[in-house]
Image 1 (cartoon, one colour):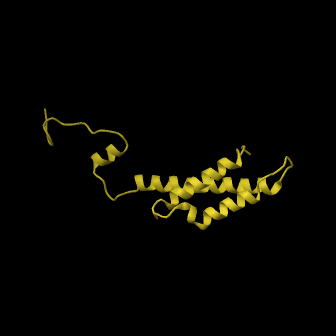
Image 2 (cartoon, one colour; image 1 turned 60 degrees about the vertical axis):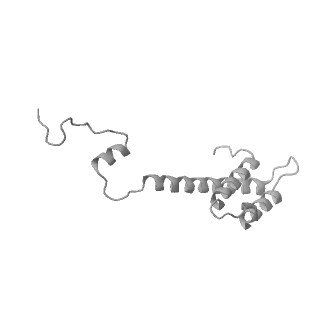
Image 3 (cartoon, helix red, strand yellow; image 1 turned 90 degrees about the vertical axis):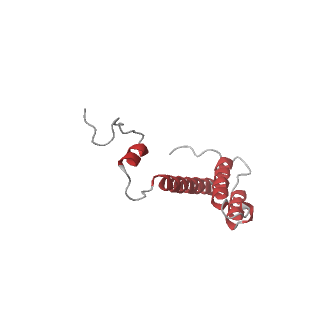
Length: 113
């Protein structure tokens, strides 16, 4: 298993994703129930001494997993909007989509040497 990193970084990442989700509503993300729940859960499970706290590690792992899910969904939606099929495309549009250019015929269609 890969290292999770500090819990504060995971919390900041979750709050960043929450801001992205609430950007279209015009309402501050701090007024949402999700924000209050996240902050309350991280405060309740923080370690105050040097002893091993299984519940804190469990919460951190679940939060990191949920953060990965939120990022993946956001990136999937962005990719889907960019590359979603828009019906039938011309040959020139399809070539431009993958970064190619069609050769230009100097005499136009039907030009023969």
